[in-house]
Each structure stands twice: as C-alpha cells, then as structure tokens.
Length: 112
Length: 113
Picture (tube, each protein chain N blue to C red):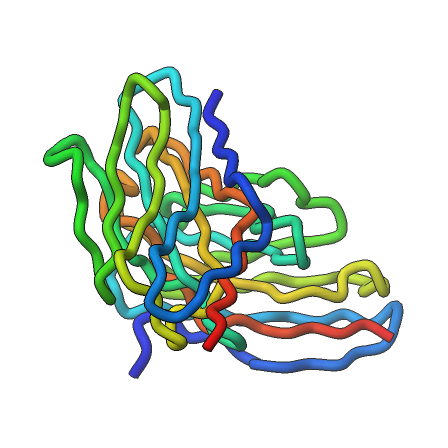
C-alpha cells in the first residue's frame, strides 16, 4: 500500500529565505512522485514530478525536489521565497497503475 | 479554454435536494476522478473511472454517484444533499499510467444548507 506524509501543516518563511517543504512516502514498488500547488480559489497545478529519471527534479517557479530512496523522501525546496509563493502545496505518490495518493497539504506563508 | 472544466463554480443548495456537478476534459485522457477537499484533510477520492465502461468507488463514495457519459465527460451527483457534504469538489484527469500527473479543474464550491 502507498502512503504519503507531509510534515507540517503550516510553514512560514520570510521573503528571500529558503523554502523547505517535507514529504515522506511509502510504496511497495518504485513510485512516481509529484508536488502540486494550489492557489486560493483554484485547482491544483502540477509543480514537478519524479518518474525514475534524474533524482533531482526541477519544476516551475524555481522549485525543485530531490528523490532520496534511502530516506523515502521527496522534499520540495526553493532557494529564495517570493510573496507569490504563498499557497498550499501537496505531495503525491503513485504506483503508475492504480491511483494517486495525496498528502494532507502544507500551507506556505511568506512574510514581507 | 481550460483543459478540465467544472460547472458550476459555486452552488448553494438545500438539504435533501439532488444536485449534479459536471466535468469535461479536452486532454483526450481515459482516466477521470472526483475528489473532495476539506480543510486539513487534503483530497479524498470519491469515484474514479479508467474508461467509459469502468467506474470504481473511492474511499468516500457513500452519498454520491457518478456517470461517465463519454470519454470527455464525468459527472458527480449527490442524490440527497446533506450539510456535511459542504466542501470543495475537484475533477481531475490523467493518462493511462498516471506518470504525467493529474490535470485538475478549478473546482466547485458546494454549500448545503
């Protein structure tokens, strides 16, 4: 069975500071891993994905994530936060054959 | 036009009423999904369909039904709405392997009073 855990329902950073959103997963098969972003009053938008190619994945808006099999982690980072990054972020895992499991989400606040 | 279109965007309905939420996609994907989002609970899967003839219950299907009218259309019905079905509902679509991720609609905010 697959599962995904996002550590921290809320994260607050200052503008210009490093953004780190944590995600740990479990999967019995090599997983596909995703990060989605949801802005207020909008649907979820794919930020980046890992599908067994390079372990460091770059996405839109300067975000990246690193797949670490030994730690079963797929943390999302951005070197310098911008006010426009304030949103809710969801980590997700899929085995490619059945369905995707979503984490509970982490809301990112960016302080001026 | 959006890849996944949901209608209506907002709806207020009374307890006991039947309501249908509609979803259409232009991605040409076979897989479609309905999710419910509540604050702090992430997304919960209501129903999913891997093709027109394949419909499956998700983790919270009680009180809901679906219809896959065509590859591009997947509607969700609440036969007799109740207040705890007040939530944000999302439709999504994916390719046959899920490797490309999901494409979501903009959501329907449903309030049952």
